[in-house]
Amino acid sequence: MTILETAKKIIDEGPICDNCIGRQFAKLSTGLTNVERGRAIKLALAMEGDLLLKEKGDDTILKELAQSSPFARKSLGITEEDSQCWVCLGLYDNLGIWADRAIEAIGDIEYSTFLVGTKISGLLAENEEILWSECGITYAEQFKSEMNREAGKLIAARNGKEVEFERPDILVTLDIANDKVKLQIRSLYIQGRYRKIARGIPQTRWPCRTCGGKGCERCDLTGKQYPESVDELIREEVVKMCDATDTKFHGAGREDIDALMLGTGRPFVVEALEPSIRSIDVAELQKRINAFASEKVEVSDLRIVTKEVIEKLKTSQADKVYNLKVTFNEPVSKEKLISAINSLIGVEISQRTPQRVSHRRADLIRKRSVHDMQLLEFTDEHAVIQVQCDGGLYVKELTSGDEGRTQPSLTGVLGIQAKVTELDVMNVDI
Image (cartoon, rainbow, N blue to C red):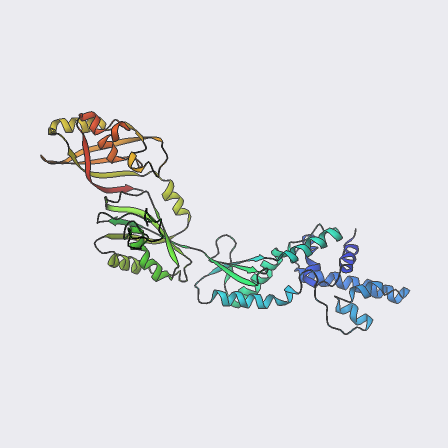
């Protein structure tokens, strides 16, 4: 079947706009818009119809074409307004209105790039499928693809921004089905390091165990197990500066609630959700966070990064350095302790998931290594031991043995029960 024969079948189905008829042949040529294709096809049909009218007096094609071709109507002396396209229901006539609505929805949000998506109604989808089925269309472009492109051109002309297919700052969805414009704003990712200089603070928000975050008497209706976290102490100023709806916290591992995070700090990324402001001064943000979280958390080396950094943080197995304050349930000599410490250096440690975290961690046996151990301080009451080891090694259980779940352990080697009473993370090597 030729292009004009297919076009005649399309015209037979009812009034159709230039966009919709041109879109049915979108894959057959380059360098043309669908509107230009549609006009060219209608012009060719009108000329063929006019030729038949002049030679044979047959105006059948012209009468069929008159409903959508100004040229054909002129040949027949018809002056009525165009009928609405039955395929798109006149949607392409209102593209400018949709572009204006998109600009209005974006408002004062700061962005450099955008992308348009379209959610069409069931009726529009059905109309397109009927046309393809009835006319044997095989070279068409989908309605949504053209809508996204043409609306994107109009929006770009109005806002002066660029269309970006991979990582747009804003995804604009034209929800034709519900007559709405929806926005999806790309998160802003800020990387840095934090030092936790106060004990009793979890890394992330912790819902109340009793009510699950709903609020109850036990949590004073806060819905939180702990009043604050590293996450929340950083969140406050990020939300303000970015005019974000909230944040998500991504850390390179985590320390226990009762542990300090010292040294150069632990790497993290804070994700600002739906930010209205993207061009922030990270030096000023760092200053504000440190003032707000004074004597609890300090942040450093803040910078804007891409989302991929989060995956690197989560999958990295960084070596860690800990200082452990250890007590013993029986007297132990310094010499015996040093000997026990030295026996663990360079040894592979086999750890079954500790009892204290078994409710939230898979019951596995993990293999980790101790790279170095040193006795920093020794008194009659306690010892301070520094441990350098693989990331993921539970150093509290390395000390206590966790009732035999960690092998070997300081307790097992000494034959005397040892326990960590204070833990400080001194370095996370990433």
